[in-house]
Length: 639
Ligand code: MIG
Figure 1: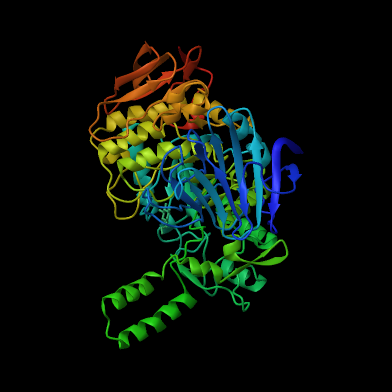
Figure 2: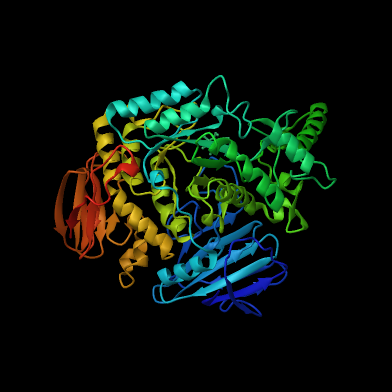
């Protein structure tokens, strides 16, 4: 199929990345409206004063990306400050929206790509790929939503998880034994808080080896999976990209023998270190290796597992054996010298260069479509192809069952195979706001099934932050509370106001019929589940600056509270709307409010939902599991 309003321009020798599924009209020359510097491979576009730039998926800062520089270069960096340029994802689709005129750009280039969006020069957007092998798609349309639809037709339908994955999930890095997990299930049940999933982090494995389960800590795993399922709970284990080097470990031995690991220039398998200690990286870009690794998930699906999360697949590298040797050699040199203060800083830099060193991405190769390709040139595809490996295997292993799958690293195209979570955020109010601002960009890029670590991953959360974050998370398709080893416990039963938490989680379950049908609409019609206001209210300039309210589906707007010690917030209503102030699914007040600015009260346990004119919000009776929600027995709140 060929799409009408998309034109494609090729530069250098672009790779078949797998991002797109249809063709577009091929043009000769430079994309209309853009400048191009052959020397550097940089595209430039002059921004009008009114132009907003929206998109780029999982990145820091606001909904309007103008004023900062973003580098698509998948990175394992747990510090998601405003001044970061790269997170775990490369989703290179954006829209330039001047209000009347707008157009979209998708840069299909799997190496590092720098988007300078009015950072160096406020009036210039420049796009600079490190390697000039780019397919540049220019997308026209009457409106941003029109452009989104064309883009998504180009890149193919988004992943749909099983129904139960729309429930609430509890996760934590640090559940070590089956009993730890039983305890989580028991405490939730005791309080009557709905729960569909408990996630298993790396500690379930034997010595962090993929597709193994520690037999002492999880005796009779198959029965344990069954036992949990009888409680209505799906166990969702993590899979890491690195394969432990250990004699006798089948995944290592088979991969080694068949030559399925990434190799260095000299043909030897690259040795890196991650949680298992020394590892090799499967060459997911190689068709055969991808199939082989995918089939390994069967070990766990055979035990009754129906969902996974793929981690460390940028890939994260604690160190490579080769670079570590270089560092040790340099350290010896430093030891001999008398260090002055600059020498000290040089020394510190050398030691600091051990982990997640981008230079390491130049040390290994892929066998990609029959070509030997250095990793850094196709770096951003690695997590995508790991997830594709799993998803294609699920088609073979359990063709009749939907499997939950989401990944940390991503690239456009992966949205057909799984969702994403947004990685290691922190328990900060600003990260709740960041979650709100990322969601529409993820939706736009096709990653409709996505969400953040609710409550925050790193750092210590607080009860009020958790409450407000849950109140927003109610609306995100992936709804998971997750935190890091060593941080304050944040399962909902750890707090005082468990009754309020219960009400909020029940509200999520009551909203599942709405959430699910709007989610499916976004998938089927290549639309957006979460939208910025400016995409809908085209004539209202005020909406162009609203960074903290979202449209969820076609019927409602939300305005989450994301600051500490607030009992309300300012809300802009672009039209008359009916406010529903929920305390629980059956305790709420409603009021029709006129268009305009207002301050609206929202106590810590209250959730603000605004129904648009002529629309309605269906509510089900909550159940303890998503699949038990009666989708037909609905109460409807009309505008
Ligand atoms: O180096 O598996 O983003 O969710 O809990 C950290 C342990 C590895 C990073 C993931 C996080 C997970 C953690 N992992």
